Amino acid sequence: MAELIKHTYDVELNWDEGRQGTLQSYKLNDSIEVATPPEFPGGVDGIWSPEHLFVASVSSCFMTTFTAIAEYSKLDFEELTVPATGLMSNESGKFAMTEIVLQPKLIITDEDQKEKALRILQKAEQACLITRSIKTDVKLEPEVVVTALT
Image (cartoon, rainbow, N blue to C red; front, top):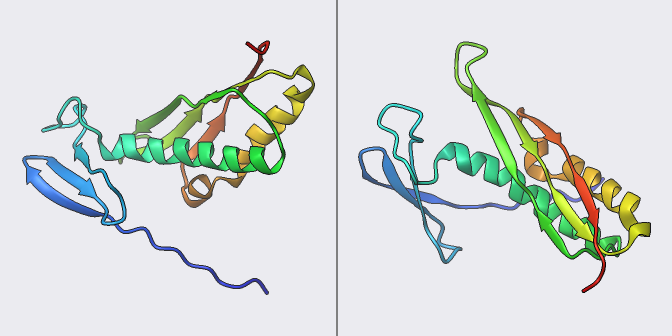
């Protein structure tokens, strides 16, 4: 039987005014302003919302999982960008984040590694701890581009 391992991630939110607050962690250097998104009453434009942070957590987990698997698999790559779109809808009568689409674009320089790169992208989506922890449908639409070394 595997040893039970537990990690904790502490954050603290301090209300500032209206529907705005500041999110921080004693373990991190930076704080983040958060607010209700502008699509809702009292929402604030231009500030990170819980909805943005939710999508960002899936996107950043995908990136960190991919880089770990790529390193372990000895896949060299030049660039990775991970655009992500979250869809919130009230299909069941209550709002919920129903879908997140990840569209990672990976740039490599070796044509022979293209299939391996695609497999690692797919494996990263399946292994992402955040994706496995949520009920939102996460769809992967990867792109692998091969470019010449500069």
